[in-house]
Length: 213
Ligand code: URA
Image (spheres, rainbow, N blue to C red):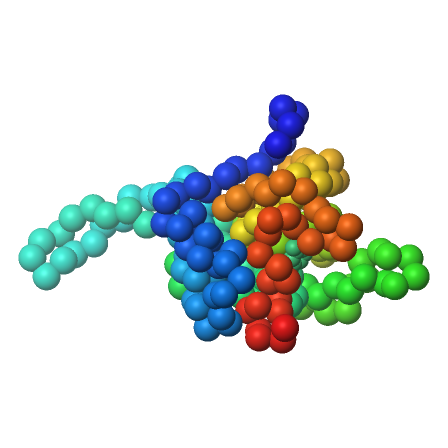
């Protein structure tokens, strides 16, 4: 990528990089693709939550009383952007089982080419939660950015965007329109092609997750 400073965090753990390379291969079938995406999502959630605040608690083990640590910060909400975001949901909620889940669905209007909301269902206390929005492919950034705008309109105050693969174009757009939203990715690829696919990317993530190729 060029030298410009983008607000993006690359999670380049060796396990994630290895699994992502398997996902990219065109010979990887739906079952393996889905499992790998879930595993990577767990590992990314583990990294994203690294700085979550803790509080001291008094507990009693079968042997003795002692002090322990428990999560103390805001409660979490996970919001997959339909449909490919669903492929990352299981991994995140495996790591954060108490998280509430919202869903956002957007389609691109063929005339205006603008994203249009067709589904939005969020936890009622969305304003109090730290939202992790999940969408595997950050391509143009148009739908992710529109989803972030929608979530803010519904009251969200704290949002993190978690993607698997991003194009520089998508990061730039989300950074411009939502400078308050940190983006976490497992890879920043080269560019978008004329059909809007990330190059080299991994193809259509939704089709590969759901076997609708
Ligand atoms: N969405 C995908 O699933 N893949 C891309 O490469 C771009 C957008």
